[in-house]
Each structure stands twice: as structure tokens, then as C-alpha cells.
Amino acid sequence: MVYLTNKRKIINDPVYGFINIPDDFVFDLIEHPWFQRLRNIKQLGLTSFVYPGANHSRFQHGLGSLHLMDIAIRTLRSKGVFISKEEEEATFIAILLHDTGHGPFSHALENSIISGISHEDLSLLLMRKLNEEFRGKLNLAIKIFTGTYQRKFFHELISGHVDMDRLDYLNRDSFFTVLLKEQLVQTELSGCLMLLTTSLLLMKRGSIQLKNS
Image (cartoon, rainbow, N blue to C red):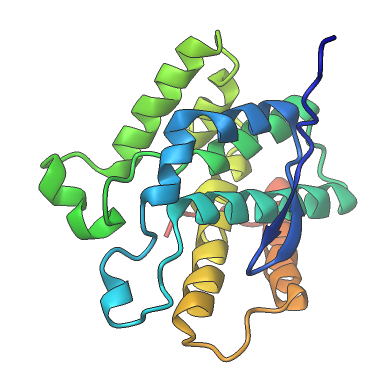
């Protein structure tokens, strides 16, 4: 008898509560050893020596960023922005893998392990290797990650003024260091996404153009 794995898992995240894995292929990437290794990479390096609760990992951050990207995609669609299934999956992949290039203690040792090579460079290298392993299934994700895809706002969701990476680490780092007494509530996150939606719609009409910070 063949048993099929249910890939639509639900994860209980300490910051956001129950979050869903939105895509079967995304689940396969989460299960890959190169993403699983992020369980042992501390998000804030040596910060736990001052804030003992700051032991959260890049693995948690990757899943949290994926969750916020899922919210962002649904918000944009609800405002009339067309996003294809292929673009959705590629954006999920790009945000999930954006920090896979981090080494031990994250930014604390980034320039000490390999001089002149950033974690973004290593993340891109790993994405390209995964693309070979999965026979081109990351082609669009790589274009979005590098900002070469024609619909530039997808890259803004990865690395921009109000990207999901930043929204998650501000929320997650403040939660685990207890610098904020309360985590950012969903309405505040939704407000940030609404601001992003407005900016994208204005950009679509030619009124403004987003620039990377």
C-alpha cells in the first residue's frame, strides 16, 4: 500500500499562531536539508547573551516571512491586482529561501567566514543549485529574487520598503527579546500591507515608482 504525504501542514508559530504551508512544492523545499539546517542558525547571532530569550532561528524566520507573503498575496488579489498561480508559487519560494545562505550566528560572522561574499550571494547560489536539482522549477523564483522579473513589485515584496522579510524580523525579534510588551497585532500588519497595496496600485497607474531602500 502506498501512503501519500499530506503536504498542506499547519504549524503553530509562537508569533502568529497557526500558519499554513500554502503549496506542495514549498513543503518539499521546507523538507530539504538546506532549509532544515536553518533550524540551527540563530536569527540574532550572539544577542542571546544579553537577551536570553533570543534563541529563535532562521528556520522560524523563513516560515514567518512565508506566512506574511501569503497574507500579502491574498491582500493584493482582493484589491484587484492579478497574480498568477505561477507567480504566487515563485514568490513563496523566493521569500522562503531568501536567508538560506546564512552561516553560523547569522550576520555576526557573515564577513568572517567568506570575505566579500554576502549571505544573499550564497542564498542565490543555493537557489540555483536547487533549481538544477528540481529541473528548472525555481526559474521564476530566481528572477523575482534577483529583481529581473518584469513585474518589479514582486521583488519589492522580497526586498523593498515594506517587504515581508523586514515585517517578520521586526515582529519576531522584538517578540523574543521582549523589547515590545506585545507583539504586533494582525491589524497593524494588515495596515502595512494596505500601505504596500496602495503604493503598488499607484505605481501601476504611473503615479509613483517604488525605490529600494
